[in-house]
Length: 168
Image 1 (cartoon, rainbow, N blue to C red):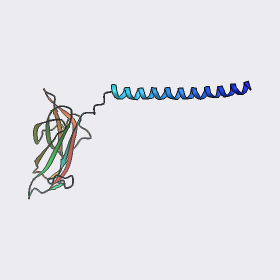
Image 2 (tube, one colour):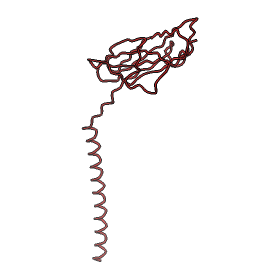
Image 3 (cartoon, rainbow, N blue to C red):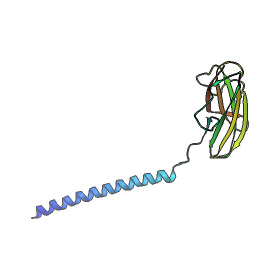
Image 4 (cartoon, one colour):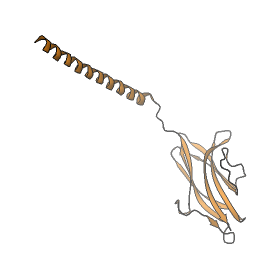
């Protein structure tokens, strides 16, 4: 009988060892997860956006073909959203070009046709109707660039919208 008792006792010790190991693993995982949430910096990434809407404030009927004989201008709503954690001063520049480079990291290096500036509190939106006039027939890209005030100068945010138009 003594051998039978030793086998049963050994089996109970192994089960107890597994329970202790699993419990320890769960405690360690819970501590790591809790530490991550308590000590980690979980503020959302700051960003800003610019977008265009047609005259009905929808993203549907953008102007594409403009007739010089009827009216050589068109209007779109330019919408800027501030998802930074502070009040931001912005500048939107409207530029018109026949040739659009593949990228322009410092903004398109041409004279703007229109510029306006405004301040925007965090989590707010600014919407402005911008009218663009072009009298020369041809195919054009109208670029709306978003710039942010750094205090001493404006920085191109890398955010822009392109509207392709044809003037006849």
